[in-house]
Figure 1 (cartoon, rainbow, N blue to C red):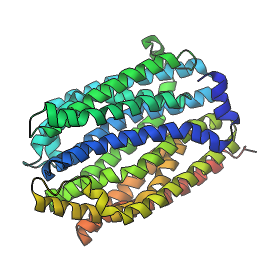
Figure 2: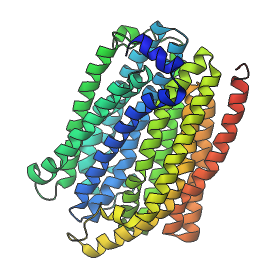
Figure 3: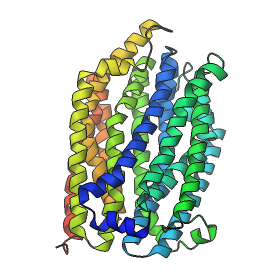
Figure 4: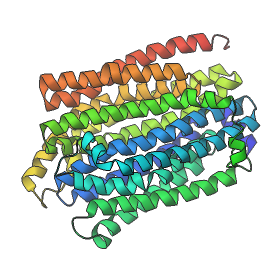
Length: 463
């Protein structure tokens, strides 16, 4: 995207159109990547093995860890990149982009090594049982130990491309990897790998797809660097200087939020597995289904972030506020539709993920029963969850790292996790499912109050 095109989107294009231009490619890539994650679960479900399903639910925590690392450098670097572009500081923006890439690579390699060395203790801590740990090992080896580097780099490069105005290239890279994974899954699970190794087959397909996505995004990044303030030069990364603090001021809270959500998922898995592996498997199905509206809403937020960041830095606060408002209305509409559909189709949707005609049919039917009931409860969290995400992304775009961190801590540690334990204690499995809508509602109320005061303080000079 040429400099003039970026100016048109960030400065002059009608807000709704600018938001759609940035958000639609991101939403598409989010949905395609969600589909390939769901395809993994769908094909594993064809085995009728609830323990395989439970194992892949456990690994969601480790895959979220990769998201956390990509947010540290991708969201932190991407937000700062957009603000520097708005302030017309392209040289500093190049330094930030290069530092983000090398930082993400170094951190992902370190964590891969640690997970590889301590795999069994980590999986046991996450809630793996003797029946599920063998499958959890298979997925962890390929997707986390070997696959963290291409996964984290792909997401980091996509964030940087998107925030420099190259949303379509970022979307194509992530979407292409997702489509490839959909094609490779059945090949590796049911043709190449022997029976009983279906989880390993899904993991290998994911690894190869992430490598392909990473290679394309490197190509797109290098090509975009000819017309956008992006760089892969190590010498540029070393010139980060004082901007490192600004990057981490937003990146650390963003990564911390994802890490706290990981802690919440660990708590959820441990509480669910304490009831039974079938409750854990049912909750795992729900955690995949509920990501459908989440994918759309996070796509809206990621499309909103660079426009808000650019206009906050350039001083056009009216355009910034209008972008925030337009994104909020769009996300709440999507959430309302998703609640309606998931309440009506909870059982048929969850039945897609586990066969009742293969394997242990009684266990599969019980798992689906749990999943449908959990989904109807947790679907209610969608609108308040969006308000939490949109507020967090807005604060990140404004460089409000301390406020983002405060919101994350209050949202997860004060509301969500304590309510999860309390409601589980009072009402059992159904109370555990109700922890999310209750916690997210309290978090959203706090978030909106916090954002109100930040906007009042930081945009008082707006026209």
